[in-house]
Amino acid sequence: MRKELNDTTLPEKLALLESMISDSGYFFETITMADLTVYTFLNWIGMSVLDGISNTIVSACPKLIALIETLNDNDKIKKWNEEKNPKLPWF
Image (cartoon, rainbow, N blue to C red; front, top):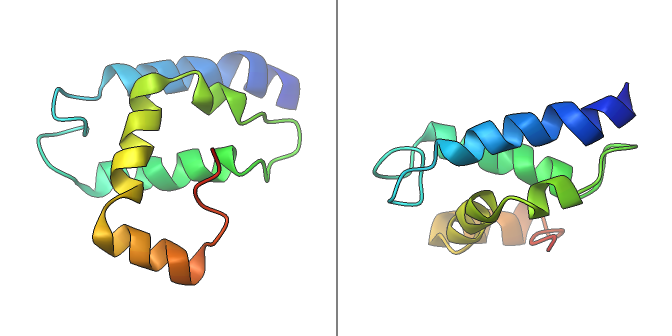
């Protein structure tokens, strides 16, 4: 099941998410909970904490990586990550 999730299901879902990114670089015109939720999900995959799920499936999505980079540079998110999640950035 993990192989199918890694090879087929997640890449399809990530491609769908990537297609939803607007010209602003977010899902909507400004940062929303949608961006933060996807950011958390992508970092979870990216940190390779799920057995059998490769972080390369996220790396293959340039718009999603750009979203992660943008949110990593947000002062409040950066501060939180420095205090709570030193594993970031994972790429």
